[in-house]
Image 1 (tube, helix red, strand yellow):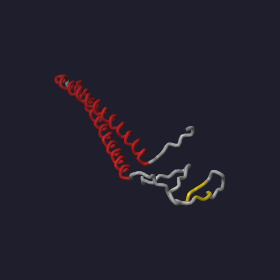
Image 2: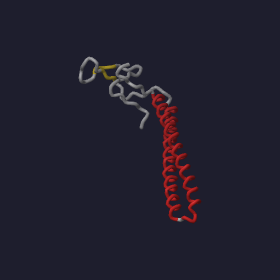
Image 3: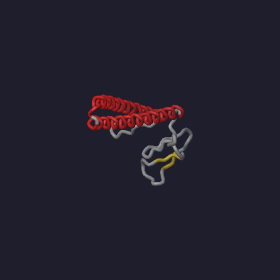
Image 4: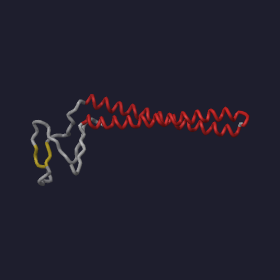
Length: 136
């Protein structure tokens, strides 16, 4: 996505630009003679934050895959414990370790998800995006 921000409801004026009535006429319908409004922020900061956001997304997906793999291995070991009663104790221990790894990996994915959300919020602030609230 480009760093340019398009505003559909609100038109911003750049310095030195003249405004003219929009083609539809109307009291509140004014447009400016600019092509696109670019937020007045440090583009390097926005790029850095979005790169960090992608990095956290990648780590979140790795955590999810780890949780799935460890969960699958735990189920396999549970099956092996039933199938091989001679070594059932060993398989039960490995099942518990795999289950603990699955929980840990899920927690890591959850942590990275929240880091990604924080970076997304920072990127919005760095880009100059403002929330247009109806009541205030």
